[in-house]
Image (cartoon, rainbow over all chains, first blue to last red; front, side):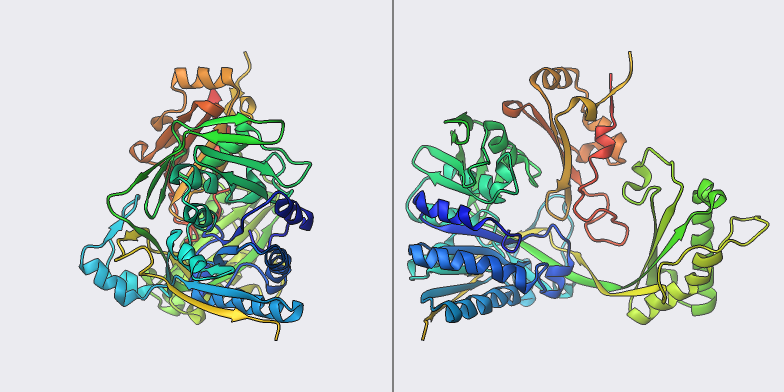
Length: 443
Length: 103
């Protein structure tokens, strides 16, 4: 991922081996709905600019295209503009001249309401009904572009393509599909290398070289110390994908059921037999994140053995008293707020699925969500004396627990949730995306 | 005979989000254990439903013989990033499966 770093020597090695393009992903939904909800990136400018400088210098000097997908973590327009700003700054500082394409993938909720009413939006599993209100509640909606807008930008003369939200594979597949290479090996190869070195035996050693031809593809690690094995390559089809044999892309579905994986030597793997089935309907997947309230959190440590021994009772007692006090003191209706008590060191990570309960210390994370920040904090403050002193029911003395800081409350701001799991049928593969092409020069 | 867990016989058991709405679990085995577990039907939708407190009819199970892997996917019980979701990447959700005692 752009910003995660890589050894510069691996880029030089890829160019020596004759790479036709450098492609890298810069985003994911994996870190949660905040980034799409706010249009902010997970990475810092320093991280991304460092990687971008190396890639830009290498690609421009080698006269091969650089393609970056899902700019700014979530692929919002602000994410594309953020990286475009860095690219222009680097161009100016390093006296690089190139043609820059920005492809924007943010969607207007009103356009999607029209598509919804026209029956063009379909739910993905696990299916949830979609309403106009849900679409309009999103602070940002992006469509995951396929390879077509990226290919179109290359054909229009772009040397550097900064794409908004794209499928993880689209920036990798675009150049090969544009050269007329077959869709099966191209999409399968792109899926295999989407996380760079993840498909090797040494995931931190940098990227890989993907070579696609008319019967299959070959993957070579760019670090001399890393190796691809048939297992490491085949296993990547499982990664972050619900189905290990199929991958839906906008124009159809990759099917790897009959793919074969063969070691060409100790480091290089050849794959053949991948098939791509064009879909009846071309579809663009949507992602939308909506504000769902404001959060305030408190952390408190419990070391009291009696309370730890009966932590379930203590948690139930706390929950009951907080609800009671919020109702009595604040008069906030129960459906206007919610809170979560996680018990780190006991069962916070697995919850009811946790099989082991042998704690000597428990960290309580008390997390409140309400319609506005002031209410969320007011509820946390109502809970504060209980988080400090709540004994077990019928205990003879009052304990005091351990707050790590003062004030005990941390305001987390707006909270977001992903609310779209749908596809839309666009007029054409490029119609939902807007491309701007500009020249940078060292002038 | 002492009890053996799936985590002890597997090369790797891992969990991760497959998008914001799904959890996916991968079990990588050697050929012998893969054959035995697939043949015995150890990892059924019912077993997974019980382990993860999800409806069995929402559980997808795939056998990947080329790499002796079994893949299990089901909708996330708590939506990613929601108030009651405690594992943003679903990265620690392999533990219940790894702890499954193999008959």
